[in-house]
Image 1 (cartoon, rainbow, N blue to C red):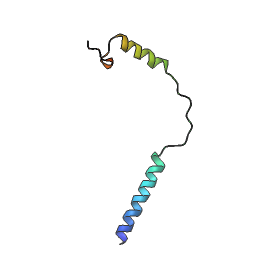
Image 2: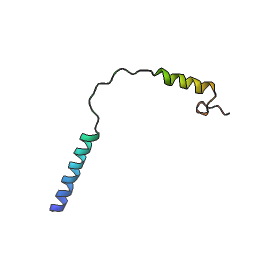
Image 3: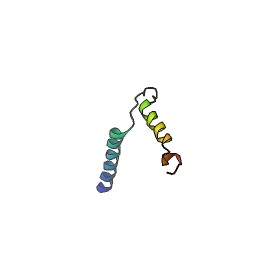
Length: 57
């Protein structure tokens, strides 16, 4: 009986510690931003006919 109870207590403690460590914080995020550097790289890939966009070289 004690082994079964201790097993459940360990499971609950592990779950709580996992939730506290890796759970989502309630922080308000800034507005989404566009990174111009990434947009330029995407346009460059599009112009050079990258396979990502369905073109084959």
